[in-house]
Structures are given as structure tokens and as C-alpha cells.
Image (cartoon, rainbow, N blue to C red; front, top):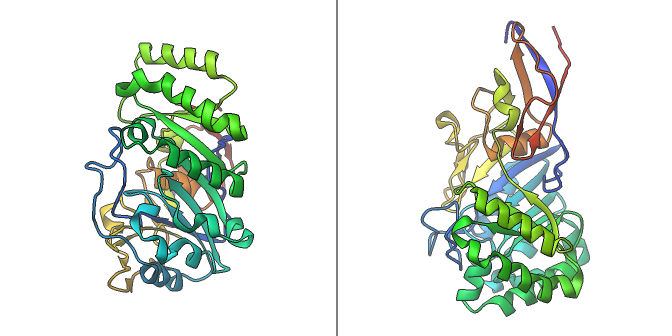
Amino acid sequence: MQNSSTVFVELPEDEMRIKFAKDETIVFVSSSGHCNLDCSYCVITPVVKHNPSLTYEDLRFVHESIAGKKFFIFSGKGDFFAGYRKSDRLLAKLLEHDDIGVALDVNGVVIHCFDSLSPQQLAKIRHINLTFHYRQLLEHKALDVWKRNALTMLSMADSEDFFVNIVLSPPERALWEDALTWYQDNVFAKCGKKLVLINDVNFPLAPADEEVISLLHDRFGQVIQSTRRGNFESVLKEFDHVSCPAGQSYFRVWNDGKIEACPNIDELRNSGNAKERTFFPRSEPFICSDVRYCDCYHIASAGKMEFRRKLDQPMPQPPVAKRSGVVAWIKDLRRR
């Protein structure tokens, strides 16, 4: 594009950012159409129940349609393990492929074949987010089940890229202390794994909430790993436009089979359907000026996004912005 320069964005340290390889195609998969919990702060409204889920054959089609290495992020609508039967061994089958890496975002109520995975298969699970939904587990009388599954997963796969987190939703503030007490006595005391506190993106924290969180840090400091407040807009909106590989080396696959290059841009929302066995990748990058979503953050984290700025637009001084703990430093690498 004329009259623009390319700049390099050095993202800040983020302990929970997934570590991608630049030669991997990222496939963000909402494979499950079911969740066995019903959390009030779920970003999916309503929480999915008994909707279609992807089968191994659906995922194998996606895998075989994309050349080279693939990294599947299993997150999104439903809980990954709740979307299929234990006898399906879906996770184990996927991990038999040499060119697949996996990230799991799960609630821990069921873990199916996880406890039978081999060391070689476990090594391909490079990132795990295990969420501790205390109120729902309490109401479903599933705390003991969650404890057993959490300790099993941690004993087999704990690493610096395995995170146990709890969502601090203001409507459930009365349970925060009970939740941390239970976790301290039942998980931390057994294995020493700390909790990441995550804010509820749908409910901004009020001063009273902030005060309670401060008190939690005072009392449970040894149990808390960090506090995270996600905001994907960050400084990305500072740019005039970006060159994005969505549809080339980034895709979204939904539980009904729909494949999208990007779920946020209408022009990029039809890349095929895994259940219908159709796939339409793009032949060139997409020039985009709406860079504020979690998809954008994954692509930028993988070093796949080229940021551009008009030549007559002044370069900001670092740090450019600070929003909920997200900061970026920009180095001018103008290429005329």
C-alpha cells in the first residue's frame, strides 16, 4: 500500500500467551456443542447444550486440507471433553499425528482419555487452561470430581504453560474467599499449583471488588500466581491497517462445521464447512483496519501479522498504551 510504512510490534511478556511456531497454521476450534456447566459469566449466551459437535472425521478433514504443521486451539463455545464420548478417544486420535500441536481450554469436570495418553502424546499438548468454576462445581456437587481430574492432569502434564484459573465475577464476589480457601486446601496443598485470577470481561470491577481482590492477595498470596485482565484491543487499534493471514494460516472452525478465516469480518466468514467437506482458503493476505479481537492477538503472537502505519502519522513513544495490563513497544522498521 502506498504512503505507508511497516512497523514491528514487540508484544509484552504475557505468561498465558500461547507459544506458536511461525510455520504452524493456527486452527481455533470450537469443537463442542455442549457444556456440562452453566456459569453466569460465560461469554457464550446462552450456554450451549446438546448442539452439534465435531467428530474425529470432521477434524481429520480440516487437518488433511491444510498443508504443513497445524496447531489446534480447542476453546470457544462448549467444553472440549463434554462434546464427545470417552470411547471416541478423540484427543488421543488427534495426538497420533506428528504434525499436530494442541492447546486445551477445559473446565475439568470430565477429562475422558487424558489419563491414558502416552508421554509422546502429552508432549504435543503445549498449552492448557483449566478453569476452576467454583460456584457451578459446588451446585453440581462436582468439587471432588474436579479435584481428582485436576490433580490427574497436573501430575501428568504440569508445566509453565499449564494454567489453573478462576474467573472473578462481581456477582459471585461473596464466594471468592470460599473458592480460594477450597483450592488452597484441596489442590495447592497437594501439588503447589497456583491460581491465576481472571476478571469477568462482562462486568468491570467496581472499587469494592478491587478492595476484596486486594484482601485476597493479602490472605492467599502464596496461592495466587497472578491477576489477569484481558483486553485484546490494546495498542493494536493504534495502527492504520494490518496485513493479516486469516484464511491462509489462521482459521476458525465451529461445532456445526463452519470454517471461517475470521469470525469478525463478514468478507472472511465463508472458508468452507468441515461437515460438508468443503474448504476455501485465501490466496493472499487480507488488509484489515479492525484489529481488536482475540483472533488478532493469536495471529500477532505467532508473528504472522504485518502492522502498517501511514507515513505522515507520527510514531508514538513507548509505551504506546496500557490497558488492563497489555502494553506494546513499537520499533520503527520502515521499509520504503
